[in-house]
Image (cartoon, rainbow, N blue to C red; front, side):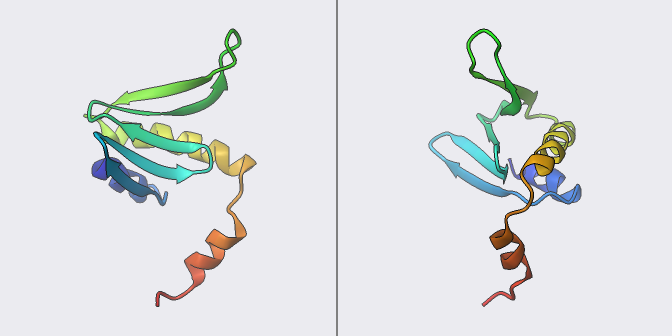
Length: 98
């Protein structure tokens, strides 16, 4: 997950890594949480099943974090149009560390 985090960072995308209970999570944006079991990265692709109404998920092999990062960056760009940066996040990015 650290490699994916670094790949996203190289694309200018800030994310937070969390580990525990056999899974790793990468929080990227509103409605964009990537999780991994060590073999695959998975995230919601923004679609719902017409039949069940459940969310559809994208998956990518964890052995190729660079390509996964580009796919996630595409989803991130889509979400930024519908969920702009929250004011508090913008303010906290400008604030000097204590």
